Length: 147
Image 1 (cartoon, rainbow, N blue to C red):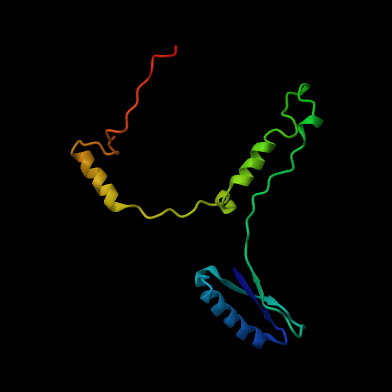
Image 2 (cartoon, one colour):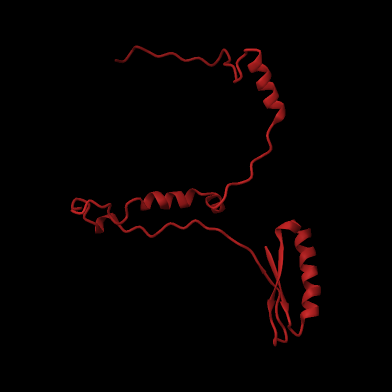
């Protein structure tokens, strides 16, 4: 989030005091202090300039797909893909993405599990299987009934 306070406005002192209140209200609402950036904007000559609170929002948007019936899919003399080639795939991908910011940067990873790693390494050094072992109820067979 970004908190913009006016600089040079007639109500600058009141805006600065109000921006402190806004920060405390946002902190009480669960917004972490490091998630809130502060800046000023030039409001010289304005008697009453507002405090602006903004945030970035990412949204995955797919292009409008041209309908296939409007294209002649049988005649491609230049050997190029038709106009809407891959459009449905892109539309489906955009609909399935949970957090579009993932397309710009990877999420932070969870910390490693040192206890599990030590257990696996100890089993490896002792020559035991490091994966899960099958229980008695886990079995399968292939039938020769249908050929």
